[in-house]
Image (cartoon, rainbow, N blue to C red; front, side, top):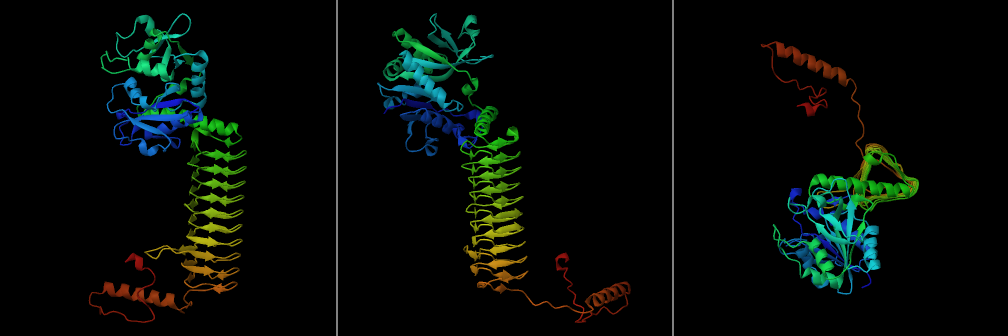
Length: 490
């Protein structure tokens, strides 16, 4: 094991979140809170990651198999939590202690902390920050040579002297230790305090008393110390994380027109010269190719977009959008949708589990489900693939260079050959061979004089209703049917 052991303290109950979801599983820009800390540790070269979980291991299911999970059976303080991981700490290893609810810690900071301790030959190095208002934080008391004497807690009025309360350098709760020195000092930490708990900062004066050096690394970006105890703090941290994501993407060559009104998850990738319009949300593993435009007001989840494509005012999940494709406005692409190069999906079109061939157009007002469509085909308005028979889904296959007319329904399973046509208003239940025209509708019949007969009938009915002595028998004129196409009003 070449890298340090990273222990993440994550056993807090998070009651102030007022949530059924464990605090450390609340998402921040597409990644659970604990996932941010794990990612920073791994990217910094951790040889082993140990997560100290609460009883019942609520985090276990969200952690991959390579992470060691241990349990702090009772909440007796941070030093007590670290003791739960003692079996996984090598005396010859460097040990980094992080907090699961401080997710803005960066890879560079974790690596620098480990390097600072090793370079100084210190038994411990603590991560500190200087803040304008240190209220509630432990103060870092330095010796004349700049080393750390102790961390003074300030939870109670008698904990710190007036001079110590003036100190603005705070303890972030992040540490680097030499393994052997840490294990020895942990065994000596007591709980002689108001809470009868074992506090990790108490390790520092023990190490100094044993003649060891304790140093500090001061942060330049105090945002890295931001912790989360409630949803207000969660929102504040998410805003910082989102700003970091957006800034990195823009520095990489993408244009985000209005970062404050754009949501982009941490695992999203944008190629150079992509344009992200306001009101857009990009989630999960979404990727956007060079020169493509997304938005405004578009949501993509786990969707891959190719080069020079455009997705406007639309929603896509689990879709693949090729190069030079146009989508929207108001399109809905569901999982399994594949749009090949040069294809078009227009307004109010829904597609799922379907493949649309190169240069094929589905311009508007259609539902395409469980279908395969060839190249250079035009799907006219109000085309429906009736893919579900009440028990199972069936597929429709439409060939290349097909022209469907408006209001065509394909009752799956059905196959339409290359170069075929369909007639408007058709409901096709049988295959159509290559080059054929499929017509499936009733023959039109026009009834001459129909309007005049209907009008005369209504006039007779009106006259009869005003004459109480009139004959109330029903007119059975076959040429003037009572149903005139307005049955929905009855």
